[in-house]
Every structure is written in structure tokens, then in C-alpha cells.
Figure 1 (cartoon, one colour):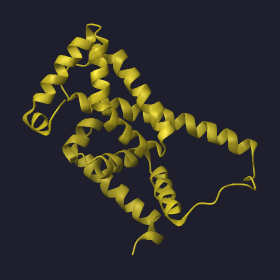
Figure 2 (cartoon, helix red, strand yellow):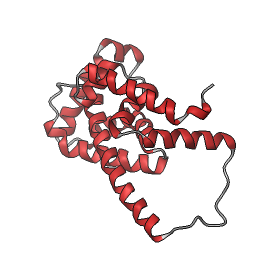
Figure 3 (cartoon, rainbow, N blue to C red):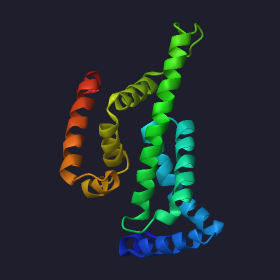
Figure 4 (cartoon, rainbow, N blue to C red):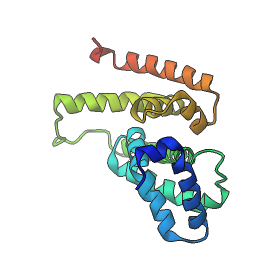
Length: 189
């Protein structure tokens, strides 16, 4: 088990590289160790991006499948966490495009809401409004907000994950926050 001291001392990165090397050689236990190590983090990120656990599970599963297929390409230039986050962001974008197509198809087939649709509580309405506001942002803006505000990554880490300059991260985050303020104006005091 990895401790906070290990993470802070950099032992985690070398441990990741050792585990990746074992997984490349066909050690399935090593790959499962990576899944155990990063699964919860990736799931939290996926829930923030997808808005629900079911879609997040699909995204994380596809992320690890992609990581498994691409393990030979991992060179350790970025941390394993950064590399997995990049894969997850791509998978979330693919999933979102597919979901939009599906929802468009459903909307075209059904023009009314069922009479027995459940009503939501005020707190769940607020969460749904925040989720809808996040969903209304462009993918670039949603990514920086989720990585910064929900996952707590530094500007430098976000820049590395998204492969953009730190100034771009700052600019996108500024614009995303401004857009969220506008979208959630009724909730702000």
C-alpha cells in the first residue's frame, strides 16, 4: 500500500514504472495493481465529467482498456497518473459524443415527458442545475474546471494532462468560471 510519504518522496513514480514494466511482460497482477491504485481517482474524475456513476464506470473501463492496449507506448515522460488522466479525458469525450447522438435520437422519437416522471427535491434540483451548467460548458472549459475544482490538480498538472501551456489553462479556467457564474446566476448571492 502506498503512503502519503511515498507519494511526496517520489517513490510512487518509480513504483509505477516497476509495475508498468511487469504489466508489459504480461503480469496481470501488476496491471490489476495499477487499476487498484488509480481506479478510485479516475472514477471520481469520470463522475465529474459524465455526471453519473453508470457512465463513469463505462468511461473508466474504457480508460483501463485503452491503457492496457497502450502500455507499450508509455515511456514515463509524464507520471502514470497524468497519462491515465489523458486517456480518460479522451474516453469521456468519445462517450459524450455517443451520448449526445443517442439523446438526439431519443428526442426525435419522443416529444413529450411521461406523466409519471419523478419530481426532484430542491437540493437535487440544485445538483442537477450545477451538472447541467457543467454540461453546457465546452469540453475544454469543463475539463479545466473538473480537473482544478473537483480533482484539485495544480495549473501545472492540468497543463501537463491537457498538453497545453499553463497560460492556456489559466485562460480557460477564467472563462469557464465566468460562464458558470452566468449559468448559475440564480444560485449566487
